[in-house]
Image 1 (cartoon, rainbow, N blue to C red):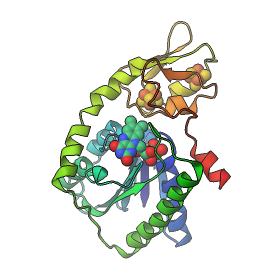
Image 2 (cartoon, helix red, strand yellow):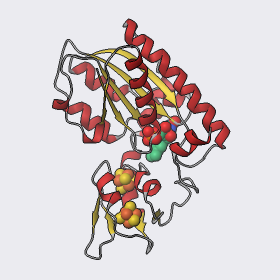
Image 3 (spheres, protein in one colour):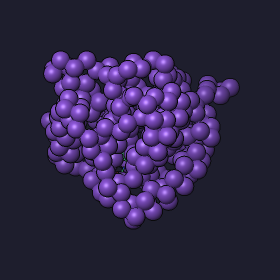
Image 4 (cartoon, rainbow, N blue to C red):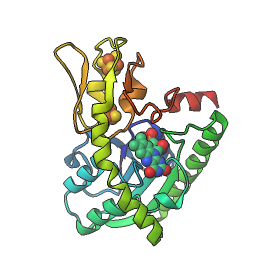
Length: 257
Ligand SMILES: Cc1cc2nc3c(=O)[nH]c(=O)nc-3n(C[C@H](O)[C@H](O)[C@H](O)COP(=O)(O)O)c2cc1C
Ligand code: SF4
Ligand code: SF4
């Protein structure tokens, strides 16, 4: 079985690792693949595929859509989709619609379609104890997901009209996200370590002639470069309210428990 996950800021990666460990403890081999560094040919063509991703603007991020479009059509293959948002809300109910549509057109059978919630990574950060409660709840849900993978039980999400409208409107955020790259700049604290260049999931960052990161028009607004910079050197020029003031590190929340 392959677990392919897209996790700009670590929440989905944590749940993907939790799922892999749980399956392995039940003698089900599960291989983890970070989506942005994976090609469809790297996956086992006969195994169950679990696709996990962070929800961005009530939808899968663009990187996920591009990956799913590249998958080779397969009428015998089963897929489970786990969307990981920042809140349990009806507004996220359509977060798998677009990947579901592509997968079904390619002949894949959707086994599970689940929505999970982990601490939000933009706009409003939660107090640590609430964030830790959310993580524990999501980890519990992963145990149920693992049991359903074992038993082959199918699940689906009911998507009411109001959620479909929000999902549709959320797609417009894609353009705003691209422009967000133009908003980003690195301060004099930058040491030109290139970490942001190497880790940007959309390869949207290059070093300019002055050995400073320059941001292009492929941004996802995913926050990875901002939160991961060891010097805290990257910030938006104007929309300073979008990233969390003290950054976001899931490892800190896990270790403080
Ligand atoms: C650009 C952006 C848009 C987001 N939009 C949503 C959203 O529509 N609904 C939601 O519940 N969470 C939203 N979030 C929060 C993340 O989905 C959530 O915190 C998720 O757990 C992050 O996963 P990751 O750490 O694996 O990237 C958004 C985060 C970002 C960066
Ligand atoms: S990660 Fe930070 S310090 Fe390293 S190159 Fe990027 S901005 Fe500079
Ligand atoms: S430039 Fe930064 S925010 Fe934009 S996609 Fe790359 S890592 Fe994410």
